[in-house]
Image (cartoon, rainbow, N blue to C red):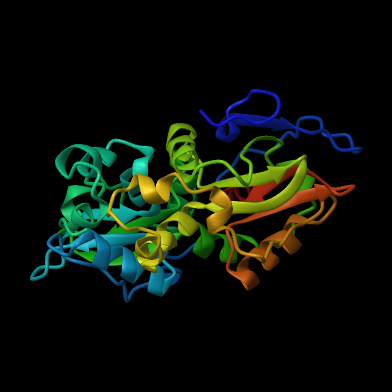
Length: 313
């Protein structure tokens, strides 16, 4: 087991750093945003999808090339929705969850053989959807209550008509001026990892705690942030195969998480207005901002945090 200097599991460290500002609980007015109009007005209509027979690798390559975190799976002839492949499903395959058995048991650890299975082997089959006549406020309510980052939209026959995401909703809600600041909505108790933590530990912890991203901290200084998309891109870009000689999944999952972290890191500060934070996320096409105060990581604000804050008023 890899350990840090305090004997705590690297991927299971809980960071609780209080800033200098008062960070007491915030009371929100609870109501669903009244946003008239059908959800199709903000949804992506020309949706890229794959058939259930597409290989896992081909599907992940498509997600990586398009910058998607989720990919609907539809029948080739009817375009009826059969499932969805998410970055979480890919993390599960790499050792974080139930579908890792496809690699470990069926293919005896051979990742190359496993990713050439059809996408139906790991896709999420029970998909939460919206009808094509849903209101925007219904999408907001579903995203906030079920904590789902993207919702396929289907017609009355179950045919895929579009997809709406947290980002689509944030683009609409963020136009309404808020008096809240980042410190009012950010997550403060963060589970973090270290640069030398094995990728296998990170995938396991992401699945266990249902995180999409994990700050990487070295001696209490923010080193970077690893996301579900980074892990998916690792496979979809085929970089993973350049680090293999035998094809065994352990060759890549035993590598340190620093392998996946790019040099670019955008952060924010606790006093920034959430409209500014939302605009920065949208402009940079990122899903979260680490919150820094006095050179220390004190929190993380995500698209979900902002959608929930704007929805509550």
